[in-house]
Length: 223
Image (cartoon, rainbow, N blue to C red; front, side):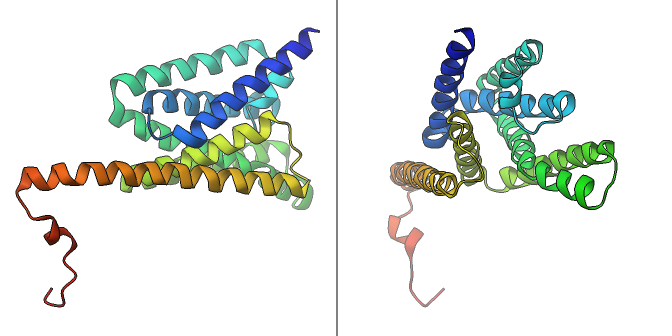
């Protein structure tokens, strides 16, 4: 009975967090930072202690101490997001890059252990390197284009949360269809929100500068 109740709880929480990130991830940076820090910390702890590549392994193995540390990291991330948004965006970029890097862990592990026949320890450290590199790449793009990168990050992580919460098998073609459909839906919704925000802010910017709006969209051949 307890296992059933816990599975229902994890399903509800996973879907709630997943759909929030999928549809509203860029809007409230504090909550997004909390969820991303929770996901990245849980994934890293699962990799270190369970040799698994996802936070969901902690729930399946009932690793309550590791889950507690994961939740604490999420709380710290939320506080950081509420008090230092600029720093929080960088944290989200790095943490999400590491989380997404976990997707490549299974591929790297299979190549290193099953094909090259190197030790498990080598595969582990390669996985850690993948997480760091993924974090740095995402951090770079977050610094270059904050809004667009946050949309992509929240859509990718949100989709992953939903798919894993539903327990969909990665070996079935229907899972790929659902994953792509969710990601495209999230991208459309969030990017439409982003464009509406730009449209609302543009008249205020034009009014404050005193520049005619037509000069921002001058398509004449004289330039």
